[in-house]
Amino acid sequence: MKAFNFALATALMGAAVQSTPAVASDNTWACEVVLCISNPGGPTQYPACVPPITKLWRVLALGGSFPTCTGGGIAKTKYKKPDDGRPGRLTVTWTDGRQQTYYQPRN
Image (tube, rainbow, N blue to C red):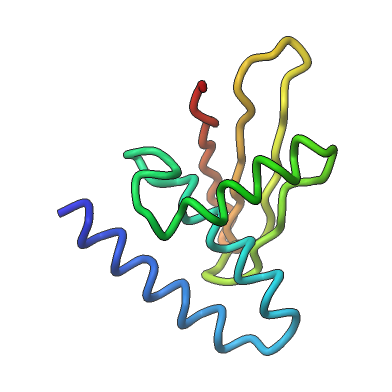
């Protein structure tokens, strides 16, 4: 059931991203990251999530910021990396004001 929900969410996110012609390649990656990181089974449970999440870890390790996904009703994303070495967390805010926080898994 989780695999079906993930596949459905991926298809819907892809459709939402494709309908916005703005910076599609950057926004596609950002939305893939948000979708993968929100997976209860872990951000790299599915092979399709490995490349975008690997790129995310590289960007964050080099001091980059968390990408912003504007598709699928997401208004903003905020990534917080604690200074004490604990895993970071991603807070997603939807256009209707709902918020959800996801935690980076420990390595």
